[in-house]
Image (cartoon, rainbow, N blue to C red; front, side, top):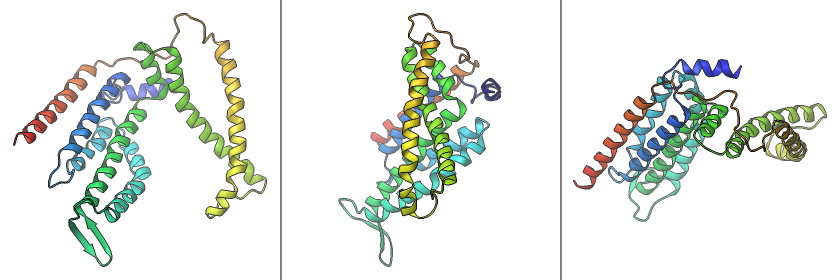
Length: 265
């Protein structure tokens, strides 16, 4: 099943890039985010807005526009809440009123903080979401190990993310079991708070038991033996890594050149 999903991604030139190549592209995108934060247009980080449009573009080029829509659904309410709170509550050191309606005021300092925080969340979360949607945890772990990372560190990376998925599934199972026993898990905040302990205790105990089982499994597979390890499904190159890195590097160099010109204007 995993191999079939991997082959689907390999059909797309961008989604099928080597995971370490994607990590380098991610690092270059972070440089662009930093530059967009530094450059201020009318004392506002307005370049973060067009930069955030690169995220849906790269999802579309990767052949996964539906994943971007899922991402937007997850973060849109939180981003809007953060922007509104920052814009309405912060005045800044030198308050400059931009908009007013009755008791609501937006100052330049608040707008600056709101735009910065909201679009930084969109950009950072978006590029990481793209990475993990186009490359599975197992593929990234294999690529890290093939690049020379210690197999124990690669396993820690893989097991950390796998544990999140496992615990999420365990939470749903425990909630179903507790509902069958008459525990109310849905309702207002107080009802959910009362159900917190009956859910968390079995979850923690189950996680502790799984740690022991996982340790026995690793020992049975000679995990601690000092020898060359075999990767069952190695990460492979698709031949477009140099082109992708060259284009990404040119974009970053152009952005740095634009920043230098902006400084010397």
